[in-house]
View 1 (cartoon, rainbow, N blue to C red):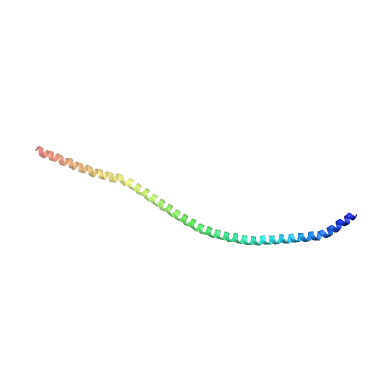
View 2 (cartoon, helix red, strand yellow):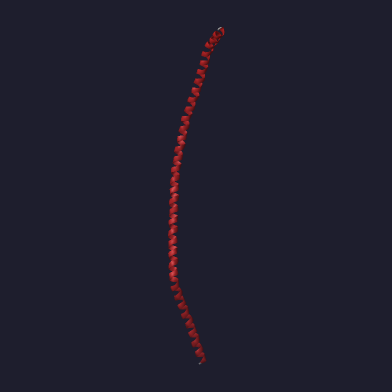
Length: 128
């Protein structure tokens, strides 16, 4: 039994010392956790500022995208209008081409006939 008494006395002396050591370790651990939590607040604040900055850039990018889209729509509108005008001009030219060709052919035939008549008249005068 003596052994148990000695063990009891040793633990009676060691346990308060171990309790104080555990309490010191717990205080240091809580201080470090408090420091980490404080730095998390700063980190979250910085992340929030970064997100606000990104949101601003996205707003500017959205404006730029809208401007490019409007410009693209304008270019497409001009292309469609020009295509329509050129198509109409070609159709009109094709319709008028026959009329102009017939008129020029008629004029050239008349000129050729007159030249032939002049030549024939000159030949008759020479024969007489």
